[in-house]
Length: 113
Length: 109
Image (cartoon, rainbow over all chains, first blue to last red; front, side, top):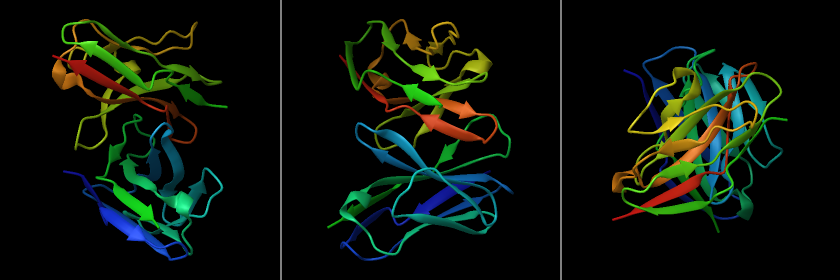
């Protein structure tokens, strides 16, 4: 069966420090991969999505970047964190040209101080 | 531009009362719409999709293209229905799923 894992679950970082959140999927090939940010009152905001290795689409201008070095690995990064980067980040996958069903990870709560 | 609107941040009802969570959308093509649910301490997961015309946990949702709505309904709410509900729209051309801001449903005993 397919599983998705993301880590770390919680992270407290100072302003200006780098960030790396990692997400991996098991049990499927060539998935679509997504990074969302969940914020109270703002719902789920799509940050990045990827349909294949090295293919990244950015949805909103921001201080973050994403990479997909392997088929089932999706990384969210920042070189210098801002206070506004604090939030709950969700990784998700779906089958290519699928039914619209996304499978979400456990989430990573980032606090920037 | 594609957009999903959920006008209510919070909906509170008593057990046994009817529930309707509102969702309106803006989409230029033929939309595919979904409801996702997040129970306390659980992952966000798919509840139902309009194309399946199914009833899940007593919930139903009908796509009304004239009103561009996809409201989620349940005739008799249960306490275990308390959760965060998100309406979502799938962009067929890009496989992106666009979510609304969510509605928290509280069902009191």
